[in-house]
Image (cartoon, rainbow, N blue to C red; front, side, top):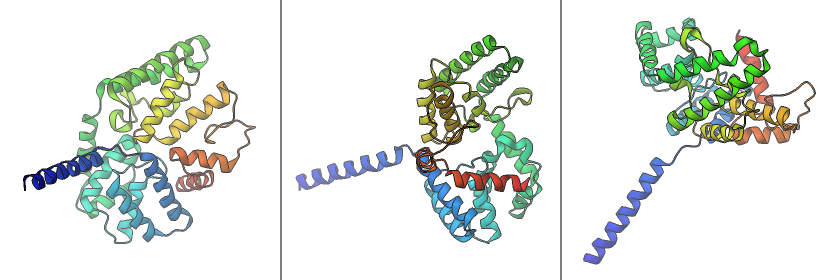
Length: 296
């Protein structure tokens, strides 16, 4: 009897360890991005909204949603589910969406249909503004200060003074490594998109000046980790790597994101590379871009 109890206890302990390890296993967002690209293709090319809603609902049960620039997957899910009278999570999902759109609130707040959707579910503009205000209070002020300076420094004298921008780029490379070590990735949910005095802070523009730094490969490897963790958008990483290959190594680019006037792409190879980091295919990207500019 004692042996049976002992075996049972060991079995239970092993099961508990397995469950805990499954829960703590880091999520690979490249898989998430590829799934989003698949669903977004269904939506854009086939206009199959019902399938789109079902697949997004399933995906967002597994992954905390992102709301990537141009694709806007979580917002798209909420909007089309509302139009089709399908379940999307109601107020809970609407509140979840607010911090995802908050980084660019400066322009988002001009979209009247956004507020109309919330009003329909009993959330007024005052409550939304309060949520955005609370989100801003939670940002890392120290990092905002540091990256505001970095972005100003990046464009000092419009980068016409070569010796000066080399010094500044080196300082920004050091800032990246210090930030990675002490705070992790300086994501939109950590520092927002607008710094002090409305300084615009798209991280991709700083990355494009990293390929000439001694620490470049270290920075590249860390950023790839942050793509996998869902902190860094794949397109930001792709632009930096392509520029490094094109202008520093004089090699063929991998992702077709940063190109020169005479670049010739092997689309099959490039699309395979794009998928490896969660980017949509070239054809899909062209469609996304056309749809975005069609709205403007």
